[in-house]
Length: 101
Image (cartoon, rainbow, N blue to C red):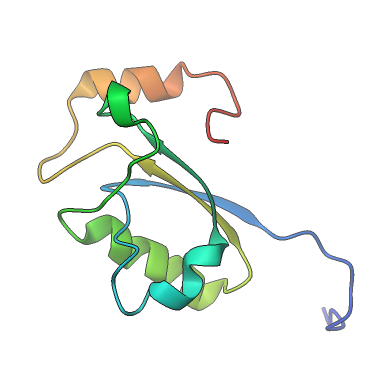
């Protein structure tokens, strides 16, 4: 199917549930505008701080943007250096939508 470049198509919204994102990473600086929302499930005091200390979330977000450069990303931090405690996943699954603003 061919979609013309000037077609009024809404951007695809993609949630990345991972270790966050490093906005100062050289590959991500120019793409920061693609991040439309953030949420940190691990730190109640800093709900929108999603700095990636492991690098996996940054890699995944970059990979998604390589294949979908016009996508709107919603970054959700559910892990740090180690996998999340199962209680984090339970809270995510039970959260009202939309949780990210």
